Image (tube, rainbow, N blue to C red):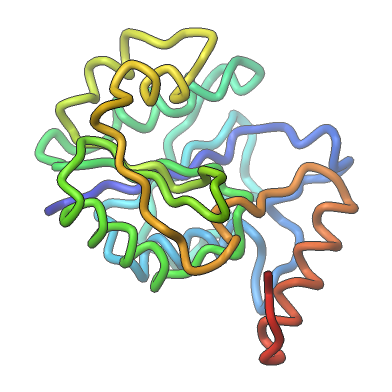
Length: 205
């Protein structure tokens, strides 16, 4: 199954007060860490949707085999970025894995497990779940591409999940990383502390 990864990186991060995707994470940045997880999981291709004037984000991904796609209207709803990614995706993709780019706890291993779950569970849509809460990446079959391109304005991919509720499968995530995005400096500090605890062999939950 050829699954195209779509990372949403066009947001302005106003609540953070600085470009949150360029914040340090491990030996690189938040954005590069998530891109590496997508690439390591074998997603093909990995598309990163950015806004105009995103030279710093492009530089952060230097040397990585990702393709950048521009969303000319980053102030609009996130669905616009999803559509930009879908429009640029290869026509022969079997499925799409879509995620905001501010989830640096995601790993290639977790995403590979999610992809395997998507195939085994047999639904058109698969979401990772941790303690009853749904997170990202969201995986959906290519046959739903046209719907996402033409429907769900104002509700985004939540509308897709509601329209196809009977075809949604929940995959039990091994940890909380599919939920751990961040919008504020406090969120980032907590996430970084959690990551360091995990690296030290503690319980990251």
